[in-house]
Length: 185
Image (cartoon, rainbow, N blue to C red; front, top):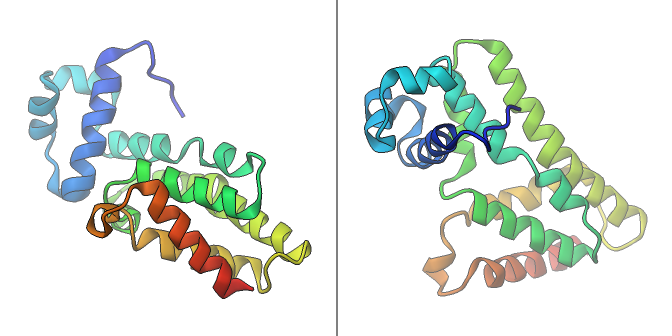
């Protein structure tokens, strides 16, 4: 993953691109719209990102970066799962399965593979490892992969919905994790 911290224009493009891609999806965002929102020219956009596809991939990779570190922090199983849920809620404002679905419009298969690998490395595998450790310790029962999919499915269904239940992301995460753990015992 490229680092853009020293480039304010690139940071703005990544941030605004993330917002637009979440709202409208890959195909719904035009380069013109992105440039207008960022208040930049097309040459400036293309200076940092080869094309819209490259920008979309970089945005996704950037959003996935850091989940593994968050998952691997110490704490009880419920604390760690709550932290994961809050991080997902704070990172995504739209159901991430829609963003992953948008990968079907990506022409370079290497880019698709990069996103799938990042998703696996940063999110799914670490959650599966956490579940396996919990199974080994007797905290929960079941197949670790199944439990990881189940947990992620529960969390995914509540992305951008915490306000509907009159609670913060932390309160919602706590409720979902409690529900998940009661069902997994």
